[in-house]
Length: 116
Image: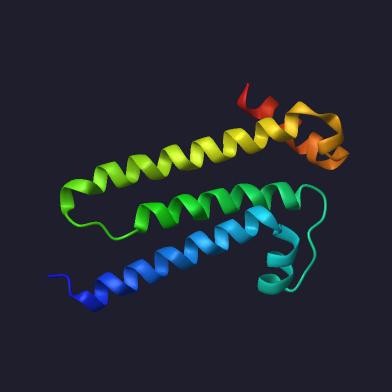
């Protein structure tokens, strides 16, 4: 049986995951410096932003629901959020060559060739 403390703890954990994800999406270099004590190089900022999208989706998936029936809807909502955020970000990177550094473009080219 779920207690109100468990419900609160799940909500706080989900909020922390989502907040960390948003921070990674906005400023991956700052988050890496705070959490890992090192700078990002090469494709690190792009990977950090994709990881931020994953953490936001995880926060949505873990958000406490009212009943068991809503679990599938929550999981579907989280997957939709992740896919939409990553697709938008990768599209943003790929639209303009000026938005993508040479290292990020090389990493995206490697991912594209691996998926092809």
